[in-house]
Image (cartoon, rainbow, N blue to C red; front, side, top):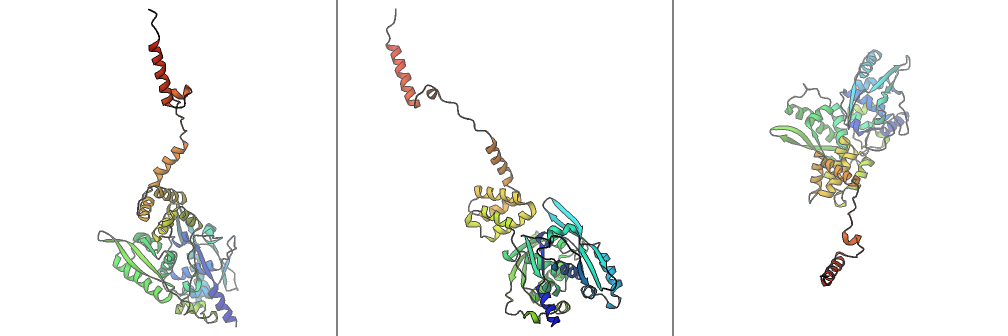
Length: 378
């Protein structure tokens, strides 16, 4: 019975991370990623601070592929190495470089290690209200490639949009590839793209097809088309779901929670002209540039497009966001509001108390005629 409860607990664990962390740059082995995701899954939604997250050494050995005969010595070497691993998180106007883990505390005789996240990761793992992606831990533990783990999160984030385009060099950086790894595109395609595609098709609730975007003869970006599989009919009951060790070896398939759209993006969508709000290309552009440039940048370009666009609103907005056409337009709008209104000087007929220019002209004409009619003194 205890074994069943353990399985039920594992199947309920959720890995939730801010989308900035999903797109961050880091180079972790498969085992290290499994360990980090297991730690994240232990975070509760109401947590306001990180706690020491307790990991059994036998579980850690399974994650990292360690010989259990030398478990203490090998685990200590590996967690020491993990303490040196850096994650780079890019935000508008800011690049954060920090460590994943700040401490590893081994207590003799317990068979446990207490691991603590670096405090600088709090905004990306604690009290998340929007702009995050969640997944079941048991799904992530089933993948046998660290690249499949990263690719899954990147595509799951955009599942609602059904497509995502990523610059090739940016994709390599996110996957943690060194400059000397898979230098030839054909090797990258065979060992990364095709390999992760096959693993997601066999184990995941999403899968993808991709198109190559070329700049001349060279592939410069990858356009992913994202598809969702309905897994409700093939899911086993909780009592039959495998343990963490079984999930690593056998690769079961479980559904994940949908990526969440930020409330900020929803507010920006309300600024878009109503007939265009439901368009995927509009939503995709807003999400992309809200992350890169921030809310004010996107807002001014939406308002500019509302004012200036013709028939092709989505295309016009995409170009405006890329080139920031709204910048000068916004300055002109602000200057127009700040320039004091100069009241027009009153006309002569107004100053003289007449109701109109015509009435004044008639008066002056009659006055001149009277001057002509006066008899001369000579």
